[in-house]
Length: 91
Length: 231
Image 1: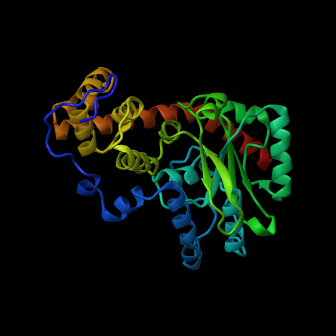
Image 2: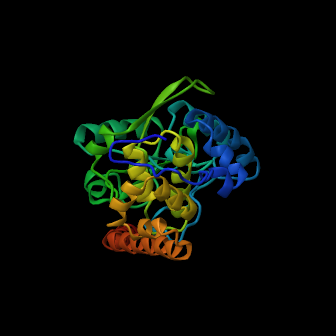
């Protein structure tokens, strides 16, 4: 059992809880991806999101501290083109 | 700093905008203005893009019109409640190298995970499941390789009762120390599930109330700016 400076682990202990035991399978899979894999997977969602009518505007959120300060906007005429810059800039 | 960072850290699967934490010295504001000009981005709401509003804690909201990024929203913030100043954030940022996809390979700088979690402690319902998932992802990723900093972070921030109990059980010495300031950890040590869930709800309610209080004068200022803009 690993013992760390200022961090001790009790021994013996019950079988460790696994994240798979308490989290939905789709999230377990997501958690086990690397950041780069998550980024690529998120990229792949964009076409589906846009095909189903998704927009680049913020979702309505009555709890946002910005309130209605953010004016609604029009949909991007070609959201996929916009996505390419998101990929390039890595934001 | 926001949704895209949450994607990289595993807290969400998708984000439709780009949030940037910035420094507001005149030189950097000029660079940002030039970048926004390149993106044909315009401010879409109050406040205007001025350093004094960013320094006060407001977000400035842009929408891009440049054809390659038409419609993309970019939000800028320089100060966030409960989050360290920019210089400290920059000093401990995470830099990720993303391989070439539709564009060239890039390096991106994102908030360190603890700073991202701090930034997500808002008044909004939607941010709290994200915090829980960010911690679950961190625990899933590194629970086999704990170190003092990770254990401290998990014990201070985990919001999944079962994992907090597990973490307290694995690291009782650290948990006992943190339990002095986080009642939820004391209850995790006792494996008192019901009381632990209530304690986590109390934590959340307190943070959300604090966030609403923090934003009250800012919202009033936004309202004033909106009225002035309408007249």
